[in-house]
Image (cartoon, rainbow, N blue to C red):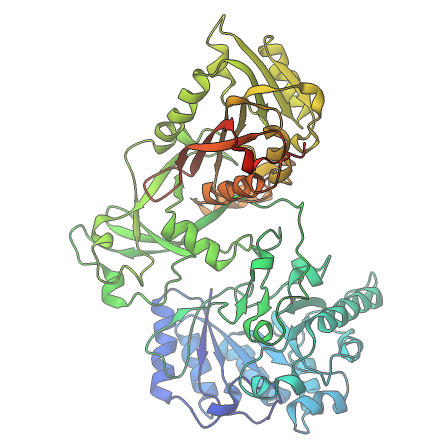
Length: 619
């Protein structure tokens, strides 16, 4: 893991888009940078990366590099590369100071294009730096910031560097900050045009390198919906494994974040929203979100892994070492401590399947964290395989709780069996015709099968033909239909009860499914919906690696909605005019929270609608 250290904001170039144009006079002291490097070591980071402004301008550069290496850390630079055009400087940094990472700016493939952005005659030096570093630094990225001046010239940079296979060429949309924000209309390109030019440049590079070795490609600052097929090339501080950073005026490290970017309401139904950066907030404020094209119908993960990072000694009864040392470096959404007998173990998630906001909500607001005590690739019996984690009592009462990632402990009771008992009780009491949508896992069928002679006509619709074949041989009283719930036809007739149990979030379009189901629900009947929200699994790194390498489930989730989102879908259905004089009345709603499992529950009664509220259900 990397720690990013800003040494000051002075620079020997004058970029049109400079984030820190108003702070170029501000530099940190040698002693404070020394402390920051040592602090990174104490926090367990394995690399210290210096940034600015331009860190290589500082005469202390080699001092800091040697100090980093002496502490057993690798060394990295975020730089314009001008000082690295001198081979003897690179020799010393690589051979003596463990230089392993360079993130270098270059904004065009010709002097005219590059120098129109940096406003200095530095193209030749930048190109020589890339060629000097190539093959000597294992992690080398050339970052091209895209403005109105170079947006039509991205192929030129690809052509200039295509012969260098051991680097990454990255294209980054200009962030409207500092100088770029002041001259927004002059500097910041249209995001759709920027995306189209990135797609063109990357495909050009892939075609040009062919089967031969060539550079990798990456992008940042562009919503995924505008980069179809290139989503996996997204690149930011987190993909570079930066865990924390510290600015010149900050007292301690803080987690890296994405607060400069925003996902708008338009992104809500998009299947790509977990990993997608969205739009720059400043761009949205100027132009809105009209460029966005939400992608639907694709699966989403509903769990992610926390794996061990390091241990911190803590004898029983000893004060909290995190509170004493400082809580700010720990990302509250991406880290947690697990309390062990004589130590606290830090766990961290690197997932890109969920946004930082989703991770923080899952952990801190909803409390959906679980210790996996099984060795299974995917837990299939949550009550046996998982132990719910809850915040330690001392953390709950701590005055730093709102800022701290917290220490967590397993609860003693089985929350899954407790919360599921209510659903099973509902199913056991059903009579008449029962329609089960997505019931191929047979999670609740045994409740009906146990009641021999009960007047139940059970029909299950599920797309998993293999699973239904097994169930048909096991439960001869039931009828199983292979198909999507979205395609439910009128030939099945009406039902007394409709069940949507652990399948709601698997539907491509739950609104269509519920509209079709409700068209077949008799007055006096019930609709019961239960499903799970996303959760974090605390696992050994080797266990998590095996799980992530396993084949994907073809019946994956499409979303991670809770009771509130499902209730809104029902409300929207009820607001559409209809003619069958039926409506729904809420009987029960159970949301998830820190004291519950990750399963929520909604139950409605089908009632006769008032004439003024007559609607038409579209089957």
